[in-house]
Length: 391
Image (cartoon, rainbow, N blue to C red; front, side, top):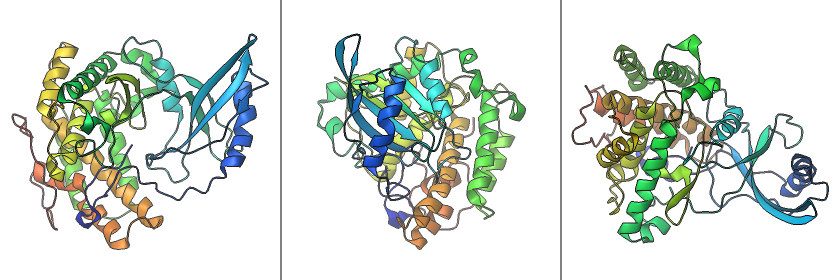
């Protein structure tokens, strides 16, 4: 997950992809450890690994490494590029486990129209790189930037509006196909012990996360929103695949077409509307709430939902509830992130404290469902035409 927010003065984060710790990894040592591992995984004893490097920008959930290799297979010279993702020692998510990333990539590998990078292998032995990790094939393409947001600069900004419209529409179409995946092939995501429906399971998991992230501190808006979400849980709550961190920033594009869907840190069975709500929340955070004009060709949240309904062939339901749940998830993740960034010295103590009590997610919640909020209101919920919060 990338880091949403506005400027630190507004008690949020000024840029996405800010690491929670300084990278101290010896990349030469990483190469020495990865070369024999990759040779075994590819059954290529003559494999030679090039320099291991880090991407120019990365998220906060896991460490990412990049590398290229050459080898011989069946008498022919081969070459490939690979991405290594390691478990984080200061994890953003409670009970973080890379196994869902591997399981999702494998479960979706044969789903038409939902491209995912192929997994080369995964390693649970922490002695090799210091943490468990998995390796997937590198997919060539471009990812829309979060920092600065692609609505204000970057390659998406530089596209003609018609080409941006193709990018946006293809992203929605791929997401709709993702949502059509039978949850029966994703039983590893089912948590019946904590809820009847996939949405209830995800809600209770995030409530537990919020308690864990607060570390005994009282966050009044989060507590009140927890009560609201439990009291208003839809009786016909869905069970279906929810990508989790649903947005174009977690897709790779080539010629404005999606060539890979990435990042399963927040994956669940909470259903398609969970993703539509998260997409909307993140969209508004980087546009309306940031005072940035939306690019021509990139649909608004209401237009995104309407286009998703066309692609999916069904109507979205319970969006008001899901918007509150999405704001709740953003709020508690930013509470956790404030601690990580404060401990790492990335944020001053006063800014980290402000994120605890007044981050964007908390302000959205307070203004969505009329909760008491003490503090400067810098990012109120901008609202979406036709979507009242209370159904």
